[in-house]
Image (cartoon, rainbow, N blue to C red; front, side, top):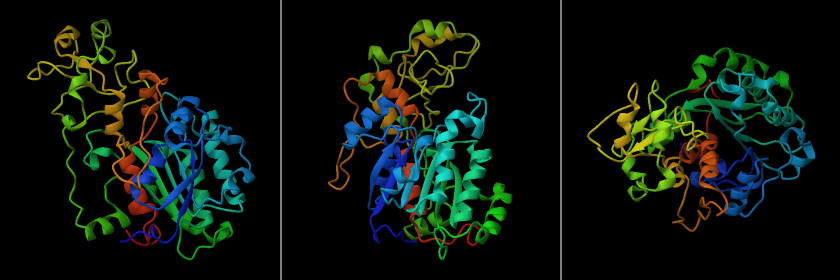
Length: 380
């Protein structure tokens, strides 16, 4: 299954751009495209984005955008990574009623009103978005406009990357023969059938659909086994003071299990924006650097962990696990991730915790978003 990436240059808009994970994903996909404009209100993220891409994101609140603000770019592709808090326990599952969901809901509302509507859309969010009212609104709008929709829950582990970061992805492209801007009644039957079959259309295996076909043709369908962490970590940082977990933070947690991995481990847990802070539990894995023949989780006896040389993963190591490009090795892939000197280690980890896995996005763009595929439901 070949992609149509060579047929024309793709013009993208990147919404909720953060440090540019979706932009890097587009670059890594091999699809010939450019990001005409990105949108985000986080000034630290915007500083990093401008530092690397030479373009300052538009910091206007997305929920205040008007059709003219978008139409002027004549974009054919939208890339979105909206705030995840409305769909999490920490955000009280407020869904479309959460103020942080206003930007996404505004974009959904604007879609049918645009003169220059996108023909391809990729959205990334946390697991549980698939159960949200926001998702239903989005799917119903896209379906009524003639989009074919693929949804999935995927982890980097499925791509051979030792990081368990399950995320929801929606990949939508205008269906063959569909008329952009045609009336909703023309597609309502498709939307109703799609929404009613939700349990069957959320893919949890990779590859699926068009990706399975294209990868089988290239003989790449065998499941990839995660590589050991030693390929991603820098052992020279094992004694870096700023990365060492304070003994006081370990000792006071007597009834909790620490998430500890070793260089030989083939899995880490999700790194969140709280990683590297006082929130040691649930924010990401800690790396054991000493006494590697000993395995402890600290429950009931956290003092046993003091001899294990526990440290945080560095921003560079987290970036590598997220498959951000850090070194430019090809002339046609000039953009790499680098942090301005005034962005602190804590801020770098926060920004990375709010980001995504570049490789997973690239594979979805390459094999699903821009694949010549039949509409979902007509071929599995």
